[in-house]
Image (tube, rainbow, N blue to C red):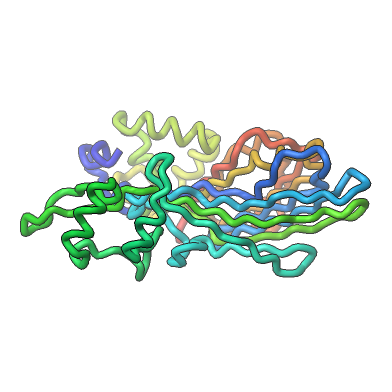
Length: 326
């Protein structure tokens, strides 16, 4: 994709981009004993808040394992990923409440190469499992013997040469993180679970849907992917064209933001979600929003967009595109 954009004289769109991570809500084991009465999901560029109401449909307490899996971070590509926080463990600043009270979770983090857990070896050399922010690994500071051992074990991968001809390396493992706790659902009582976190927001300093880019034959497949993944309509493009103009230069200074949200885990319950509400807050009434709403019904409210559904069983995840000035 980068090569395509460079060859067509539009390198800025790619060079000023960061990829989003697909994150979702809490995950429970599949069960017929607990029903989701409602889910109220609010998605903004700076915060995602989800409020669930669960009901135990049996006459006995039900204990379930609750997990909040964070996306795997492939460190060889970490420089291109939008990480919301520099916290090397809870890198989305996740927090949860049960019936209004804070509910701590045990966060488990591992370094993986394929199916092999290499966390112990990294800890042996006092190296972070997720080297971001001020914990980033300076390869030149590692003793030669340590570098050799890490290369032999596949934890460091050759990554080109420096300007002075020295071999450079990049981390070769995947960081896998999840937060886990046990939750008891008493019989004949509703339990309210709320969690929030900072989303990973993909960003570009331009948008490929601007007419000066969209009409390029070379970018045709990528434009087609956008139209399919975000359900971009002709009306959406017509409004974008009014704002952007026809020039190849982005004089209107339009940018795009992208959020992916894993919604399908809401289908693990005794029956569908009885009442589902989605609110999208793009951060300004002048910003354009496109996503595949499926059977959700729209009901605009102020500067936000609201969508609702009854007896909702999600079968796809959300991919939201926001275009405007930021």
